[in-house]
Image (tube, one colour):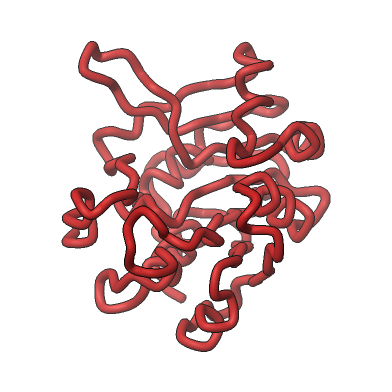
Length: 211
């Protein structure tokens, strides 16, 4: 684990925030096995992104595994991060979302990140933490072609909202239904100057691992 990379935006107040890294998918569309094990910066994607959440200021990190969980555990070094399994990973992201929240201390907020966003940086994590307000949801956002900000990951759920968000999760949508039902709670934070929010979903996106 590396020293924390606190940036100028790192001014979080209130309860600590646990980073929850969803890394349970099989990477079927990509066709290279679990995305967690993809080589990235001399390590694996799951190792780098777990440390990114911690380096950016999360008080701790929970990594949720699913597909080939034992192989991921045996071939990675996740240091002092908490690693949990979602046996029902094939049923969609919702189970991993709930597993990650359940594994976090009950008094902590939650920052949910995806293992297939290799462009995430500690400075972006820091900005999100510093921008978060009590009782709110804070989401990384990136402008579309028209310049309008579009919500992406990571997403911070305030400690008072995490249980409701977990209960609303279903299928492969994760917390999407909760966020759509409560748009007034969501604060978008432009992170486009700090990192890429692109997903590593298909072979056409493998260039994202070159960073």
